[in-house]
Image (tube, rainbow, N blue to C red; front, top):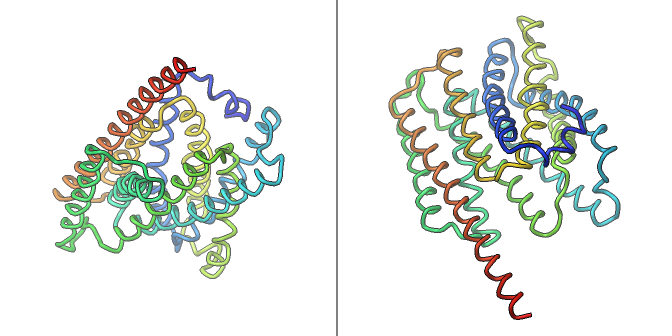
Length: 335
């Protein structure tokens, strides 16, 4: 996808925007599978994988950003916007570092299916709670029920790991997944706060330089572990790393940015639930993971709660628009 195409994303039909978001979600669902295969191919660890993913993603997104920059004004035109942009990139970069590294650690500890479900299921819940505490956003009755349902789903998932056998949910893996979700929630809340205070920025530009920040943060740790660990099949390892950096990173983020420009946030959050479903199918069919009854039940409850949370957000947005219209009309009549 070219930079000009991204620049015209707001003129995309909504149907095509939904397809972009859906493709991005499916692609993200394969990232954990690529990581799991790389763990089997050599002595890769979560830090090393995240480092090379950021390096590759940065290298692929850089020309797209450079082409798109010609068609749009830069957000770094003055000192104050530049400071805001730098702060946003730093927070996003550190948040992405925690998000991706902890996610890969979760996949390594408890498997692709459970790690993905817990990470993506907990993220919107933590975002909703954080928005309530930090920005005073109301959850509402439906939102509160959805959050409680998500905690119930997580509890069922943890109960499914009590046997300790193959395919069980391991508490360490769940812990890494929750840390990953917390990193993603921090990024989202920081972005929302900046947007409320007039600090909006080009998401492609922010992500590009966040990849650079993440790579710099991970470089010392990756170097200590070995930037290139021992692998049994060099060709397969390079192919998997190339895929990880291109499809679920550079391409998926580019399509997602284009899609969410024309799709409502709540709708996009529901569509991205394709990711844990895709990850679960891949985990069972290709990686041979076994899902227990408790794991499946907890997954269903958790995804259902997130869906309910997105629906509640949509209804709340509609109510806010109606209130805004009524208030605007009243002000017009008074004037």
